[in-house]
Image (tube, rainbow, N blue to C red):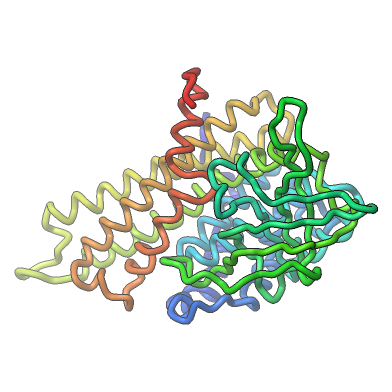
Length: 398
């Protein structure tokens, strides 16, 4: 099976790269220093059609069904944006994968018509509230509660580390909440859409993060937040299954973001190794440096192929091909694990190639070094990916 991109995909990649280099790259360092979320550039990504790659034309999307490679196109866009700025890469990934796709996949016709046109156009953003102070990988430990009272959901609780949740263009956040108890005693988890600005819904002060400084990330608090019963997204009690499906796609998208980071590390290291002079010649002629750059190429190629394979499997599933959910889940976990851990290693290598300059914030490798670590954490930690892979191999791991 070949994972070589089609001519259309290559042309699309070039168009996104041109946009990223013109609109994002010149400003990324400043946004990072100032912790600035560039709303205007996010909306330009929407105008370019990047938010609507997987959405139907009726909602303003590109109408790229599985056979058209819509999910692969999204991964290419995330990779190219992430190659110049990881903050904007995760903004795009979360806007589509965590904001739009749950509504597109599980929403009613009325919910889709109400929310998707603005989200797909990039005029507004949506978030997905899963993680809590005491519930991360253990999502079953969710403490946020939603009680149905007189035709309204009354939501109380808190979420943390939620992307695109408190910007000036955020319109809605979908949250997981306990809505009852199952027959076996486990909590019933459902997902409920909370519009921004609803009384009692507070996006608290943005985090002071290690990296992703230009990404919008907030803790959320809910105090007697009342929304209509119709704001339930999908079936009641199916919230756990819904977020698992959402995370499967998201893992591939995060792998694509990692591939962008790897490409940046290779590009920067290769250029510096050819320019930096020591002992009468470029440092790239020294095996100690050359071998490290070679390792970057190997990690990049392997990560890219694993990511494109998983993306192709997702498109094939959407097109009705004989790819099982289990096969895709395994491929997604493998891609996410390898690509993100490789990206973290790549930023360490690139920083070493740059030597003392790599430790200076004026050089992009320092920013990529800070940005990379969270790739091993978000959308399921490396430990969770290893658990999923082991289970896929038939091991009864807990």
